Length: 194
Image (cartoon, rainbow, N blue to C red; front, top):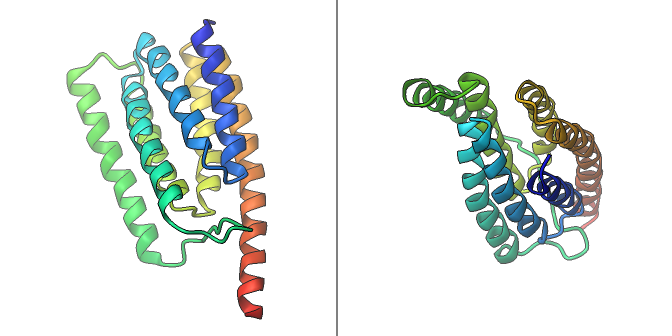
């Protein structure tokens, strides 16, 4: 385990802690961490994961911009829930289409270690990150599933520190879900009194 893995692990934990607290600096910690993770994943031929880290970096910039420019209630930094079936359908379609396309590219043009799993998890991660940028509370449930699956993938590739990290991420995602769900209930109660 290299200093890159240790540093990426520490920054990954900082990212999730700050995200749970809805602190805009989560995006900065996350971006530095994903840049380091990209190096690790490339070394073990998880190419979708490597590209995912590059996309995460761009989405981290997007998330920072969204959080910086969109006004939110100062006391609560508002969260929301997905209430339209159409939104769920689009997110599901994006995941399925993205997974199939990405896996096809990996199978055809690379020596990727686990192309189908790598593509499906990478695409699901993009969907969950988009949900985080828009402060949808359900993002945390998706992250629990993704993080548990990634821990299994990293185990097969000998990335044991990342197995630990993604296990921690899954537990932190549960905490994030509980806190954001509670916050959403408070926001709705306050809106009902207005």
